Amino acid sequence: MDLRIKEIVRFSSELGFSGCGIVPVAHLAEEEEHLRTWLDQGFNGEMHYLSRDPRKRCNPALLMEGAPTLIMVTQNYYTPVRQTDTSASILSRYAYGKDYHEVVKSKLHVLLNFIRELLPGIKGRVFADSAPLLEKAWATRAGLGWIGKNTLLISPEAGSFFFLGGILLDKEIPVISPEIPEDRCRTCTLCLDACPTGALVAPRILDARRCISYQTIEHKKGPDDTLKGRFRNRVFGCDICQEVCPWNRKALTHREKAFLPAAELEQFTAEEWESMDQTLFSRLFSGTPVMRAGYQKIRKNLDFLKSYQPDNE
Ligand code: SF4
Ligand code: SF4
Image 1 (cartoon, rainbow, N blue to C red):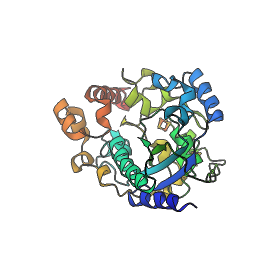
Image 2 (image 1 turned 135 degrees about the horizontal axis):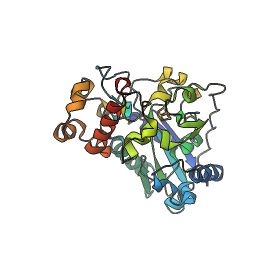
Image 3 (image 1 turned 90 degrees about the horizontal axis):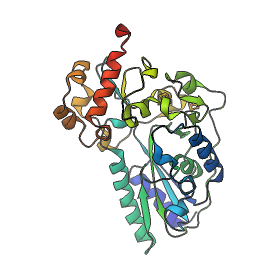
Image 4 (image 1 turned 180 degrees about the horizontal axis):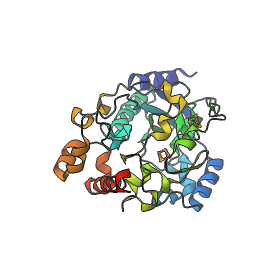
């Protein structure tokens, strides 16, 4: 392996990234076909941005003109910490700490500066869920895992509780494409069976409109009545199809301080959720991914959960 590649991978680990792979850029023709079929079925719901220019989405060289090289990284966010009040509305684990977009991107900028020292004159574009690019497909190509039947990237060493990010580079680095990890889901269907809303309509096919994550974050109007009683008290995001995945028994606790939950949030009670006003919401969730949904959306989610508690049905 080129010594510079070894150095990039070593430094990414020093920055706390759990995985790093480097691949030559290509057009993902098969993935483009899948994406178009998925969009044709309307599975993206109101996420209209996903249907903009699928060709560009599947070819990073169109995103940054002629970019020949892509670096993909994974950032672990797994924590065994749970909210202490078991009757309180549940947040997805990824929302406990600071907004991952900022945390991952700032570390990637440090990595890019390091690469510039190794390869003077090189330019790069950093992204973390912030560019129209098929991150999971590229992470697979970079050898970081396979795409599970729950549609998430699964690392054979550490499961699926990862954020993804990367850097597009404007110069070629002589990389040998890593081997694409084999699909180890095999006959398992635990995630499909466990999804409470039937959002996983087939292995690796998500109808986002039925997914609790979409309904509690992206769907601005508030959750659909057709899904009443199925949210298992999730107020922001959903980890059910990850929690049941056997590969997550290997999940390691992250060591990223920015993702540690505030003690107040960890101990937030069902009553406090219920009485939370805009001021408390802003104090509690400032700088976290929950702010992206906003107070009004969270209020609608809470009202939805409350109106369909078994006692009220
Ligand atoms: S996140 Fe929840 S609702 Fe969405 S597919 Fe997974 S289990 Fe189903
Ligand atoms: S639960 Fe089973 S089928 Fe689903 S992603 Fe994990 S290993 Fe694959």
